[in-house]
Each structure stands twice: as C-alpha cells, then as structure tokens.
Image 1 (cartoon, rainbow over the protein chains, first blue to last red):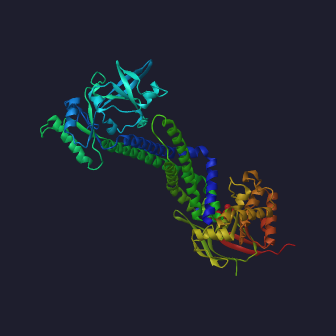
Image 2 (image 1 turned 30 degrees about the vertical axis):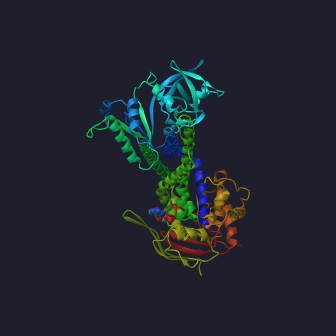
Image 3 (image 1 turned 30 degrees about the horizontal axis):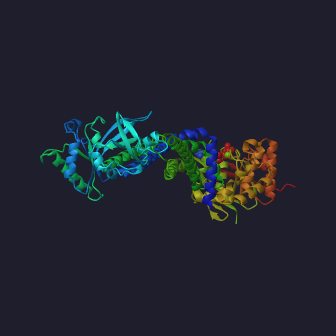
Length: 407
Length: 230
Ligand SMILES: Nc1ncnc2c1ncn2[C@@H]1O[C@H](COP(=O)(O)OP(=O)(O)OP(=O)(O)O)[C@@H](O)[C@H]1O
Ligand SMILES: [Mg+2]
C-alpha cells in the first residue's frame, strides 16, 4: 500500500519534472524514438510481407515444380547457365509422354502484349500460354465461362481466357464470353473469365492477364522462344523424392549422360519460401540490430540526463529524506521519471511509426500490430528503468545532511 | 524517562589528514515538553548537534536514546522512519519543494508515512490552518512571503505530530517583525506541550525559550534554565 503511494507520488514528480523540461526530455528520448520507429516498422514490414506472401503462395501451392532454363535462385555463375539449351514446346511434349501418370503437367510461356476490343486498348497485359492442365497446376477458378480444352490446345484454336481486370475493363457490364478481342493482329474468342486474384506480394497485379493456348505462343506472341514446364506432383509428402523423379524424367528427355550436370533447373515455391524466410530474417536481424543500437544510445542519453536531474534536485532529495523518504521511495521516484521519459519517447516513436506505416501501406504491404506496439512500449519503459537505475541509486543513497546543504 | 538522552556523543569530520571535531563527547538530556534554545558562535557545532538530534546524521561515537530506543546504530532506512514519525524539522532556508503548492509540501511527510490521499489532505489542511495559512493552501513557495514560507515549513514539521520540533535558525532569513511572528507561533506550540529545540544567534530570541544551551568548540559550555516570564 505504501509502495503504491510512493509510486503515485513518483509519477506526479516525474510529470512535474518533465513538464519543467519538456524540450530536454524530448531531445533525450530521440534515441528511444528512433529505436521504437525501427522496431515497429520492421515488424510491420515483415508482418505485411508474410501475409501478402502467404496468400500469394497459397494460390499456387508448394507441390508444383517448374522446369526452366534458369534457376530462381542462382547457385552457379550465370555465364555457365548461358550455355544451357532452351526448353522448347517439343521438350514439353516429350516430358509429358514420359511423365508419371499421376502428375499434372502444364507447358507455359509468357509475354507482355497489348489487347484490343473495339476502341478499347489494354496495354501491358501479362499474356500466358498454357495447356488445359493450368486449371489444376495454377489452381484456376472462373467467374464466367470455362478454360480451353486439350483439343483446343492441340488444334491451335484462337481462344482466350481473360483476367478479371482485363475483362472488367473491356466489358464493364459482363458478357465477355463469346466476344472477340485482338491480341496484336490476331482475333481471339473469349471463352472464360478468371476470378479476381489480387496482387502478388501486394505489388504485381495478377488480374491484368490473358491466357491463350501455349501452342499459339510461338507465333510472335512472346519474346522468349522457350517455355517452362509446370509439374504438379500432387500431395506434399515426399516432395524431395518427387523433385528427383521430375529431374530424372527431364534428364531422360534431354538424353543427358549420367556424368553431365543438369542443363535445366527444377524450381519450386519451396525454395522461394525458404529464400523469403531467409530474407525476412535478415530484415528482422538488421532491424533488431538498429533497434538495439539506438535503444542503447538512447539509454545512455537517458542515464546522462537522469544524472543531471539527480544533481539538479539534490536539495529536493535531501528534503524528502529529511521528512522520512526511505531509499526505496527515492529510487522509485527516479526510476519512474526515467521510465516515463522513455515511455514518452516510445509513444512518439509509435506515433511516427503509425504515420509512416500508413504512408507506405499504399504501395507496400505493411500493417502495425497491437502486440508489436505493446512490445515497443514495454521495451522503452524497460530501457528507462535500466538506464535510470544508476542515477536513481545514487540519489537513493545520498546522505540527507549533504543533500540539504547542496546549492 | 527522558525524551532525549545523549551520552558522550562525538561527531568528527575527516578533511584529508586533518580531523575536525564538530562535537566532543556531548552528554545531554531533554525532557518531553521542554523548550530549548541552543546558542554559540559560528562553527561551534550547533547544526551538527541538531542534525544528530534530528536523526539526519549519525554520531561518530556515543549513544543516542530517543524515546527510549537507541538510534545511534540505526541504518539509513530505520533513521528515515524515525525522522518520519518522531521528528519535525524547520530549516533556516525553509527547504520547501519549489514546484509544489503549500498543501502538497505539508502532505509530504504523510505520503512517506503511507497515509491515504483523503486523510492526508485533511490532516495537511488542519496543520496549515494551525499556522494561520488556511487561505494560502494552493500557493507555491514563490507566491508566498518569507514568513509564510516558514509557516508552511512549520506546518510540514508538525503534520505528523512528532515528538520533537527541531528548528535550525528558523528566523535567520526573516526580518525581525516576521521573526517575532514565527517565535509567537513557537511559543503557542510550546504552551500546547510540544517539545521544541531551536538554534539561534540572537539573545532575545533565545530568551523566549525555557532553557538555553551554549556551545563552544563542540562542547556544551553552559546549560541555563530560565524563570518563566509572567
Ligand atoms: N560535512 C562537513 N565536512 C567537514 N566539516 C564539517 C562538515 N559539516 C560541518 N563541519 C564542520 O564542523 C564544525 C561545526 O559546524 P556546524 O555547521 O555544526 O556549525 P554551526 O555551529 O552550525 O555554525 P553556524 O552558526 O555558522 O551555522 C565546523 O567547523 C564545520 O566546518
Ligand atoms: Mg549552523
């Protein structure tokens, strides 16, 4: 009970003391502010990235392997990879013939093209050539119509499926299916519209797209002659075995002697996720380092200003001791003052971080979370208490006669 | 039983190689309800004696019994508690908290005694009324005259109903008229039975007490009891 009274008195003194030196308190707390801003922003960025990444990744699934000329994460020097052969549609077909019958294999090719409908023009559309299996490998769903069939792919039929944004752009009142759009100079019949997907990592628009049979992509619709082979192996168990099997089939297709290295890469989201986790760990680590450093510097500043405060108020300490304040009461008083200054810094930091997060959230996924905010405040109060301890201890141990005699 | 009992109290200060004897084997008894004035030249050890009596300072050697308990061997925290319960101190320079108003200044000892806000406020108000400052409770020290400040200090010293009121040159910073007002207040308190010990340089102020101790070079040179004035 007495402790509580002493703490209330401590708060009151802290408030008075800080009020008398507002600017000093704010300047002192700069290090804390920077520390709190960094830690909350890092937290917000990592959280936002994670959330965006997971929603994006879960759309594709981690049991899909992509056989490509280039690896997603470069383990080897690029000039060695340059000698690799391109993967053509013929390789894809050969792969399908030799593939495990449980797999779903999609042959993909991409490019960026301009689409027209009447006078409407859509530029920079992400054009994807697919086989009918894309419905499974890319986990597609439709808001209207259907996907193209194997027969349409093999028969080079000029049909297309539009992404949600392209469809809404050309056909704001619906009724896309059955219309004809032009891609470059070729007319395509719209047979389906994809459901809205949102943005990948919150940045890349996944709905500004159009799908056509991959067999038509060779005809000048893509810059790259090569394709990639997407293999959905089905089931997440034994992914590494499945990867080996996919690799073996492709080596067979390529007729590689056993001593030769692969001349292709088997990419998967698994590796992407690992890489991503690694990156977000690095961001987190750097963030923690900066936070720790600025909190440390901030803590030193607080310690310094608390020593000043103790010296300035030596006489007050003497008076309090003379009327019966014990060491504990004086200690608490100065610890609270240090903690309040730091909390103030923490609050200012949080305010800044909220503003910044709010600003960058427009073009980068970032969300501030309550636990992070609470943690930030806790950490700043703790910094204050740790940094304030030495000065407070000095004050608590003062001899009342000496303290009263000080000027 | 004496309220205060000093036996061979010494207080020495070590200044480099030199030892300063501020008090030399002082023995003294003061009864409950006494009104004592301490006089002596500057540097004779008056303040040192007051600090020992007020448990602000511990003697280097000797035994000090206050209210029957030995306080000479107590540690910092125990002494703080004794000061809180038994001692009321009035200083020459008032020593009020400059940023707090009169009421809060007077409440201070009660806070450290663990008294609750409502009761604390009430007690402090009563104490301020006793010293005639019932209409100045929300003034800060810099909004009060010297005499009023010293009254606040007296109210603060009395608020815990201590056994002893110690005043080290309480009129030293006041003009003679205000000084007399404070002395009238002390007289009133003495008549109510409070034990008062005050240090002064002025003979006619000392004459208002019932007993005068004269100190020279850390020793009690004389101990004179005055006849009660009519
Ligand atoms: N903290 C200290 N360190 C060293 N010497 C001290 C200390 N405090 C007091 N003294 C010495 O002890 C002696 C007594 O000092 P004290 O303050 O008790 O004198 P006083 O009688 O109150 O004088 P005054 O009338 O000027 O207030 C002096 O010689 C002083 O210099
Ligand atoms: Mg003195």
